[in-house]
Length: 163
Figure (cartoon, rainbow, N blue to C red):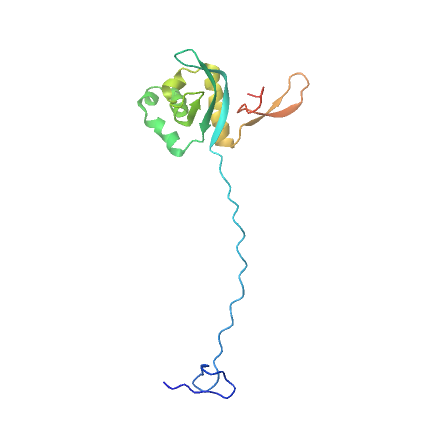
């Protein structure tokens, strides 16, 4: 194919079949840069302090610990556990054994450890589980019995005197 030139056209310019100069398409309008993505991290583990504490075999009392958010699997696994099938009240013990990740220096927390907790500590962990999994926080509104003022406390015990 032979190239034709048009007077006034730059050497090597492309011509249409009718001899007119081909022009490049107009550039697309500039697209606004996407807004930066702000990475938000989900808090999945929560610290707590037991009211009484877990007493291990050597007599050491462990009070501080951590619990992770429960997964759907955590809530389903106890339902096939034979201990839960025999006694539905055991569901709490198995479930807490799955989601409590540490009590003091004890990192192998299982149903056997949860069974040995004092009743007050078991009740605390049940409430703590409900708060972090259903409500997403560990704060509770309380009322002072003396002055009747309402205020929030952190049930995780992150500050002295608030556990």
